[in-house]
Structures are given as structure tokens and as C-alpha cells.
Length: 232
Image 1: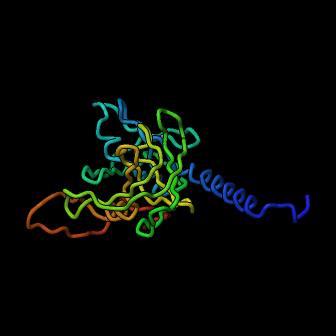
Image 2 (image 1 turned 180 degrees about the horizontal axis):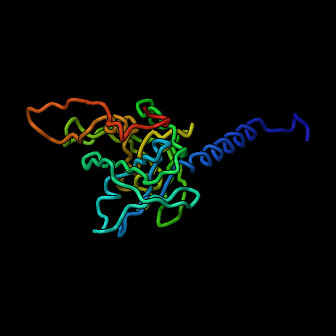
Image 3 (image 1 turned 90 degrees about the vertical axis):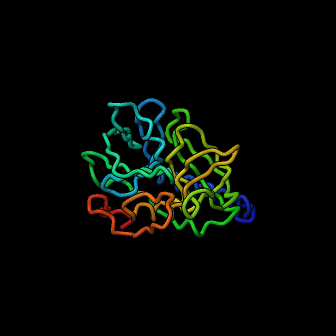
């Protein structure tokens, strides 16, 4: 085969496909399975290298009495975890892995405000028990769910989600987490923007509907800070 016979369009498509596959392989290492008994099984994202995992509140909210939360890493290692923080309104929960081995593969976090409608995105989770399943789609909408204080922001996409995907990452083409997958609306997926998650993590309590009361941001408690992770 000569250089003249290589189709430049095909070559570019193959390069893009290979780059996407490598990106997903790297992202796998930051995605965990969260087990809390009953129907409370979903995914999570390693947010800090020392064992902090971000997932959905509803994944851990329905655990049976006496059942502990377990986090299963991509290599099969399993650890108990504590719920360090929970936020029902935004549907987020922060887990802290007990006896964390440290040096976990924390996910790179992107700027969800930079997302554009039509941009490709990927979802990783464990639908119907299929560990590490990947689906792809595009951002189909960006908006705010009305009815909460300030409105809850969301990313709408056509990635395929099913039970077991909740709490898993929505990734951009660079492999950065731009959203936390939360629910299905018809045939579309709704994800919590990464910037909303970072704002939530920076506070000490969940914002709730209220009248005449302001919210004062404070520094993240020392016990919840990353030690060498991507988010300080």
C-alpha cells in the first residue's frame, strides 16, 4: 500500500476511534460500583486519590438497615465506605472509603459550563449488572430544573442509561468528568453538571428552599479535603 492509496478521511476516523478507546480505558480506573443492598446499586467516581467517591444520593439512600455501603474498584477490590456528606435536593452523596489504599486513580474534572449542545459525551456505569458498560451520545440540552432554590442545573444528553448507571460519570471527549449521571427522562439522560457538584462539595450543608435566609459559603472540612487529588 502506498501513501497515495491511504484515504485521509478513513485514516482520521480510525485515529479518532483509537483515541476514544484509549480515553475510555483510562476513565475505567476512576469508575467504581457502589453497593448498598436492595435496589441501592449504582456507580461512582473517584474524586480524590485518598478515597473520596462521588455518587448519587438515591444510590445510598435506600440501603437496608444494617447494610453497609461497599465500593468495588475497577480491579475487583472491595472496601466498606461511609457516607461523608449527602444532598437530597441535588441528588449527590460523597463517600469516604474505609482503609483506603491511597493513590487511587482520581478522575480529571472538566468545566461543565464549557459544554455546548451537539458536543459528544460518554457515560460509564454498570447497567443491569454489566460492569463498566459504555454508551455514547451528544449533549442535547442544557438548562435548569425549576422548583428549587436558584433552580437545579442539568445536562441533557441521549446517552443510554439504565439502573446501575446512577452516580457514574458523563465524560467529554478529553475524558474529563463534566457530569454525574442521575436519571432518565423519557429516552433522554439527565446529569448533574460537574461545576454544580464542585460547588456542592465546597459547602458544608445542602441548600434547601427557605425564605429570608442566606447561604454563607465556608471552607471544606479538613476530613473531606483531597490529599493530592485533582480538586483542592
